Length: 258
Ligand code: COA
Image 1: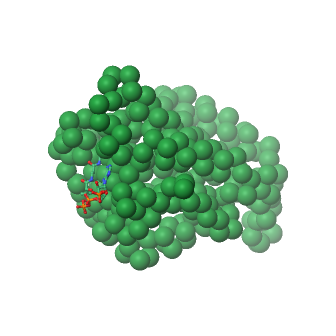
Image 2: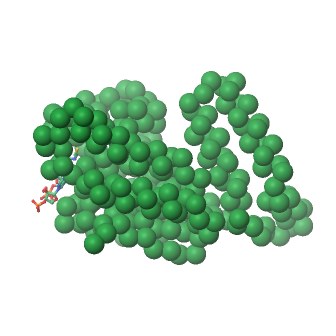
């Protein structure tokens, strides 16, 4: 049975990692299935935003499945890291906004998966960390690269080198999550944020994500050039015509989703 469930609610797709008996730990097949789901949802006009969460009340994802790492050796070790990196890349490169609802432990690969999402919201009981060094390994799904970019090198190294877990309040303080909600309300609150994004121009949202994400890999001059190009691209769309017209006519825009 698949460990990934996808539910639709209008323009929202809610992707749930469903291995609660293993705290939703990511084994090889689960990572592959997740990537396939993200790629499929990314190509659908009817999907306005994707929410990622974990089943149960204890964990979002308690990491890579540790059993699958035993005796991996140089080549399988590298392939295992690249398998997880490929999933996180698919999320970042998706034209859809991806929001993670961290409903409990987000450790190791679980935190790395969260780092690839566009927005992160945590439940008040969440615990976040990169405990890899306590297992004698290092983060392999992008944690050493994305965490410093998000929270600064000092905050990132504290988590990476100590392997400590932090609570949701501390994660909010260092900018690791965008907000914290009581666990019972987390998914509803995340859906409200997602619905606000979905109410905006879908192509504008996709291009704005692209501009911000690709811009982080560029010099300021290159990034500004990219922004101007994408501004040019959106300026040729019916979406822009509709958005500007709706404002001037004091009505809500009716977006074309294609
Ligand atoms: N890989 C494989 N199985 C995992 C797992 C992981 N990353 N995290 C939890 N599990 C399994 C446990 O082995 C246990 O399975 P079992 O019932 O068959 O023994 C089940 O999930 C429940 O976990 P348990 O450890 O009993 O829960 P707990 O409340 O005592 O502790 C954690 C919760 C998250 C603190 C603890 O499970 C943990 O430290 N997990 C590993 C976290 C980690 O190092 N992740 C990075 C991996 S690279």
